[in-house]
Image 1: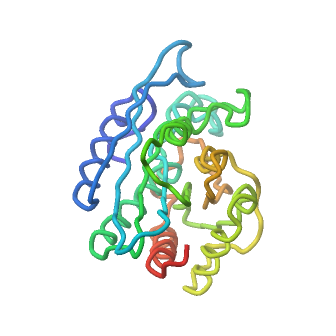
Image 2: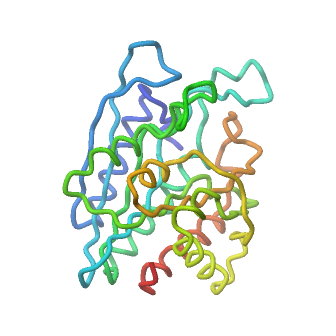
Length: 268
C-alpha cells in the first residue's frame, strides 16, 4: 500500500512487481516472470502497457497433481463507484481488492519454504485483472488480462487445479460459494469449505453466491478445475476508501490457514 496505486503505467505498479519478485525469491525454489504488453479498456485507445505475471514454484515431496493458488496485485485506475463524483477519476488504493490476496500468498510462500508441500504448489501473482468495463464485450469485459495471457501461454507450466483468492481482506469477511466455481470444480470447492469449517473459520459461508468474472475463468475455459474465493459484498469496492483500515488481519489468517491446511493435508 505504501507504494501507491498499482494501476497500469503508474510507478506503484512497477514497484510492486519488483517487491513481489524479490520477496518470492527468498522462498520459492524457482521464480518465473511472464512479461506481456496489452492495451486496456480504461487506457487511452491504442496505448499498450507493460504487464508481468509472477510465478513461484514450490516442489512437492512426491509427484502428483500441481495445485496453483493465485491472486491479482494490480489496482483499478479509476474509482468509478466512489460516492463522491469528484473522486471517480482517482485511482483505487486497493487494500482489499489486490493487496489482501498478495499478503496471503506471500505468507504462504514463507510457510511453504519452511515445510515442503506433499505435492508441488505454484503461487501466481496475476497482473492486469482490474482495468475492465461493464460495457466492454463479454465474457471478460476487459478484465483478467494477466490470467487470460497465462492460460493461453502456459508452455511447459503444469497446473492441474487452481484456487484464486480475491477481496479476502474485508474486516467483515463472508465468502460464499461462487457459482462458476461450483460448476467447474465442485469437489475442490467443497474440500476448501469443509476444511474451513473443521478449523472453525466462520468467514467461509456455506451458501451459494453469484457468478463472478475473475481470474479463475480463463483456466476453466482451458478445462482446468478452478475456484474463486471472493467476498464481493464489500462496500468500498472500486472506491477511494478501499484502504487498510477497512481490512482485518483475522480475515487474512482464516483464508491463509485454510489453504495451507488443504495443501498439507494433501486433500486437493
